[in-house]
Image 1: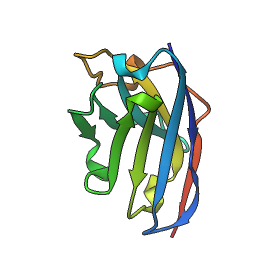
Image 2: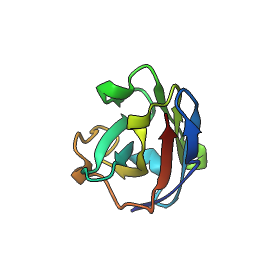
Image 3: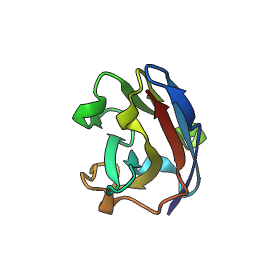
Image 4: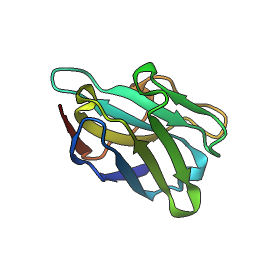
Length: 125
């Protein structure tokens, strides 16, 4: 299993930027797809972005396309989420997790895990 620890969240004004990091322990992330997820108040956890094992394929939810960039450093067992032009609707707890394999990127949060504590992102208007 891959055990994630998220960091980099905080309070930022609309239009600002944050870079989230996900340091992992346990199994090497090079065997897995990785994803960033978020849970807004009163809502279920949702996929924000996913990345294949070697970074060759990425997916973004429509609302973050062009603003967020997911990347990974397998040598450091770390995944990143660069978030630009943040909006109040991006406010949520952000999580990362591993899933799938070197040939499969899951498309639902239930196929990723285990989960860490997450990092809070709050965007003020």
